[in-house]
Image (cartoon, each protein chain N blue to C red):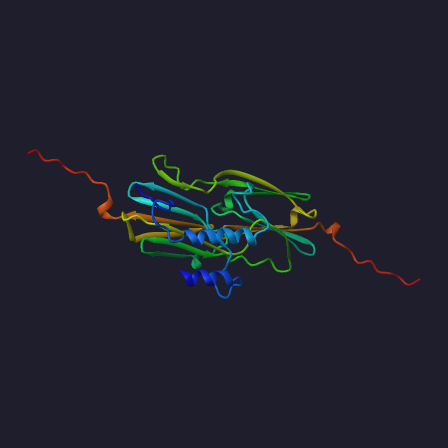
Length: 131
Length: 146
């Protein structure tokens, strides 16, 4: 982690695709839960689907993606409300999530992750036996 | 209940990273980002010799839901962003992405020809290229020797 921080600070110029490059942005995220699944919807505009990095380590889910939006050729920028960089955000997963069953989908710059609850965590009916 | 992503509830190893992020965001950016600025979508503008390009970050808006209009030197980007679920029984843990109808008018540095407009969408970024009317293109004037 310390290693990554040091690199992120210096490495402003992109070297290769998917490499970390600053500045870092925290992507807007919706999270909702329905029945046996939790869905994360994460805005990653300008990030190519094949460069999105989703990883799980110690129940921390990390999403990363570098903005790949080359400047239009022959143009100079005269006004800016957003800038190049990397989206990154981490989420802590509760024990009830099955980390092996995460589905990822990327469309129109939006990453959707569907997290399934593990079998043990699913609500189930317990029958009460008469004594 | 699930505690995904709620700071303070569980130990989060990325708190320091996020703080660094926001500091860097402030350092590197002259203009505020979407959300804090209020205007949606956030745009960048690029100027060429006889044309102008506007790029807009609008993730989650399909090309069918984008409505572009150009009039003289004003570009209007309108459309609709759908909510991620319409299920009323879904329990929300975080709701940060704006949705619904939006419309934003942007004043361009030059008048543009509505017939010279091209728009492309890629990974949630819309790029609109607009050219000047032919009548307004700068012309070379030959100087005759007397």
